[in-house]
Amino acid sequence: MSITNTPTSNDACLSIVHSLMCHRQGGESESFAKRAIESLVKKLKEKKDELDSLITAITTNGAHPSKCVTIQRTLDGRLQVAGRKGFPHVVYARLWRWPDLHKNELKHVKYCQYAFDLKCDNVCVNPYHYERVVSPGIGPLLVKDEYDYDNQPSHSSSESHLQTIQHPPSRPGPPEPFSSPTLLPQSESSSSVSTSAFSTISAGPSRPVTNEIAFQPPISNHPAPEYWCSIAYFEMDVQVGETFKVPSTCPIVTVDGYVDPSGGDRFCLGQLSNVHRTENIERARLHIGKGVQLECKGEGDVWVRCLSDHAVFVQSYYLDREAGRAPGDAVHKIYPSAYIKVFDLRQCHRQMQQQAATAQAAAAAQAAAVAGNIPGPGSVGGIAPAISLSAAAGIGVDDLRRLCILRMSFVKGWGPDYPRQSIKETPCWIEIHLHRALQLLDEVLHTMPIADPQPLD
Image 1: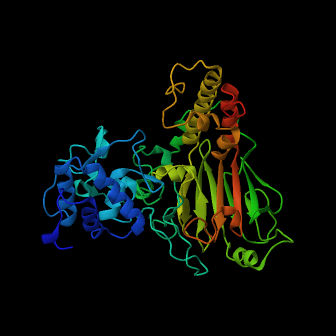
Image 2 (image 1 turned 60 degrees about the horizontal axis):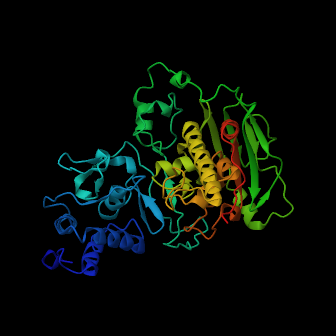
Image 3 (image 1 turned 90 degrees about the horizontal axis):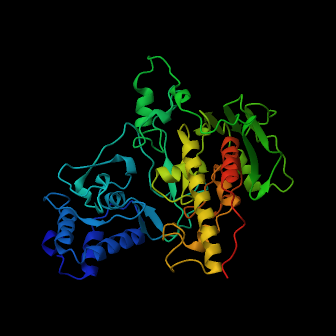
């Protein structure tokens, strides 16, 4: 649409949305972009000067100065559009400026009064009030794959919650890291080796190696478990072979597709037999190759290195959070040669404590509700109103155990970008139980036991 036909805040929402849609960058599906833009325009309809500022900024590609364009900050700071959650300034910056933007790459301009980082009640989402600070490598790309390895078109649904987030390597064959990513400030910690974590690691290989992770006090004084993880191998929904336990004396374990005997720091999937194995599974197994390396750092953080010639697909609540997504909201595609953190023990511990406390408080409030002792209909025993009483009380031990488990599929992905909707439909995958995290969960449950969920009468 030409500048002469640019709408104003007095025009109908539909005309404004149509005009702004013409300037989107194409990283997101058309239906998602339309929902996000409609949502924003409706919120700004009562703030005509800000809506005009948005229209000016977008239709002139930032050529003319524009004021802050604000929406109300939510409790968790994230915006929900079409069942997906993301930081609002990042969502709109991706739509209109940088489709491959990572959430840690935005820095607000000095004259922005309501920038996301300023923690005001309102958040500025004007994409031209932010600059992109590009890290040395390539960040995770929120770009959907059009084809699987079979060149089968994806059965993608724009309404689906799941999305594939890509994690390319920062460069071919990353060097062995010598410092821990936990030394980085929280704001710089990223779901990709390409961000400041890797620039820090590669900055001075000649300086003395220091393992500062040792200076962090342990979360628990309980002795470390004998095995730091156990790995179960599946083909579709059937476990094949025995669960493989990795001793704590082997912090790095390789899971590959070869036929050598397994033991110690190596789990070979090639030698496992399955009478129900199909031709498709057999074909996929041939591509596992060198597989992956899992590395336990510090008290229980986990990193993955993809050694295979094909990508692996990971379900990781840590990476979900790093990408600004809700837990279980994404599948992470880790490319060959990439080296990436997939689990943070301290974050997991905080999460299990919060969820256990929420469930316990909800159960108490629910019991009071059944007994008729709750003072008002809005009271849920101190739980945020966003969490319904029954849902919070329904958090069980299995929900908390999921926080301590990683799942990883070789060669084939799943979710809306692929013909397979669940990891249990992929031909070859592993489930990794992290024993230190499960040990901490045991301690949490001893301090605040969760009763079996009871339905409200």
